Image 1 (cartoon, rainbow, N blue to C red):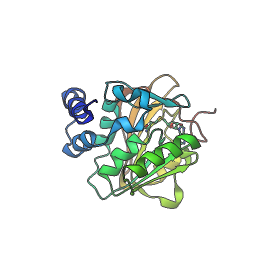
Image 2: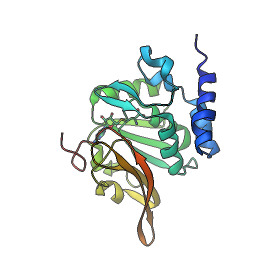
Image 3: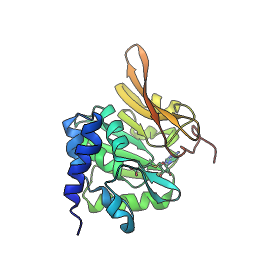
Length: 214
Ligand code: SAH
């Protein structure tokens, strides 16, 4: 039997703290959420390794460090309403569920959404809602959001997501071509919109109205 708690503690030390992740709440959530539950049983042994992993439908669960980095960037305190685009395995949604009040997550593949939702329910994440839709248009009925995270690579920042940010809200989204992207932080401030480039990343395609065409 693998000691998954030990594997998580080691992951946090060697992959996150060593690379500069500091927010104690983010580190705590990464120590707590059982990442191996979000991947195929045959891959569970590798769940805490320093790389992304396949989750079916040619999609991937991000490397732990990228999950931590994007989460830390949102600066969650606990009372936020958060939108995630690209539920995938549901792992990132669970991390957000630990750190915010309510999480709305959108996935375009019904079977991924179904599986993610099952794991999230089993683990008791009652504050996370998963929906099947094109996430590039956001979730207008629930807007505005204090934080929005896009976990697929976009050709440009989807404007509907910027429009659905609350004042002071943060949006983090990988923007670039279909091979590599820059992680962009968009903040809504009283003067307008502030953009910061957080560095290079590689994500699968964001496919939709404001993303890539299929
Ligand atoms: N956050 C996920 C990993 C995301 S992989 C996790 O923790 O496991 C990217 C996901 O984005 C894929 O599942 C893909 O199907 C989904 N996706 C791509 N374009 C989308 C869109 N327009 N709306 C919703 N989901 C989308």
